[in-house]
Image (cartoon, rainbow, N blue to C red; front, side, top):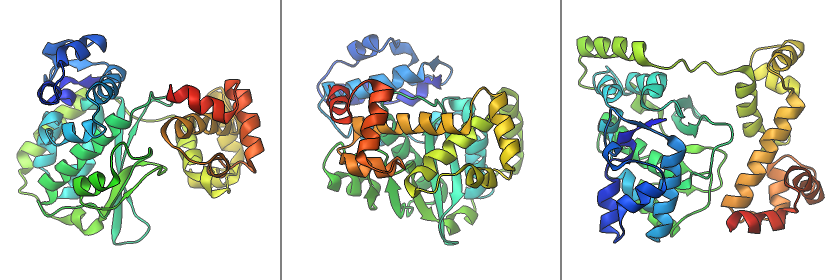
Length: 331
């Protein structure tokens, strides 16, 4: 589920693009009175489907980004108050990360150290291990996130680069103009890099209000402790393109020994090999649906030895060769 504020500005944008928003809402199974309402929860899958449908009907590849320009910290409700009253930008982002489930249990965000001490990375993802196609939702989320960063860190904020897991939905120059930075397509994650020094930038804090709001959020937040299999799957997704995907490496990343990790996975009804296969299948479907990546290159991204291995895997997973599956997914 997700708060109704996730669709703030939707009706107005669709009308400006010359279409009927209420018909789209009805087709997605959403009530008009929930749009923009913080106290209403709606199906996140329905919101994702609505955004994709609106982009098609209005023939607007930038629909998610345009909607993101109409939203900001206010969509988060009390979570936004916690961020605004934090002492620093870093503390504000930690509050958002910790209590994101108050806005939507379907989403997770994280701020992580970059490749160098001078950089950091903001990442956004859908928690569902098998999410629907969500290109517009992802661009909406990153658009709003950049606006939140500007509010917290100052109007001079610009990401140093933006990462999208899909290919461009409109002219690539539109993305550069929108985000103000280079954009990497078909990236491993959704997010953006920024100067780590921003995390220590002070905000006009109100310690008393911040403490009260955090206490309140603690009473309504949904626990987010992920299972071992979730953590392993995320690491597998990151490590697939490196060609160095081994159980021992994953165990080291989780500060566990090999046998302990195997026991934990077995207790959850799975195994390392099964998770690797699941992640490969999901990534193969996503790349075939959302990108024009050549099949030989896709095989390498999935950590497979050659294109023929990809063909055999696709026949096992989907009952079709990769090229046939791509055409089917596009339809």
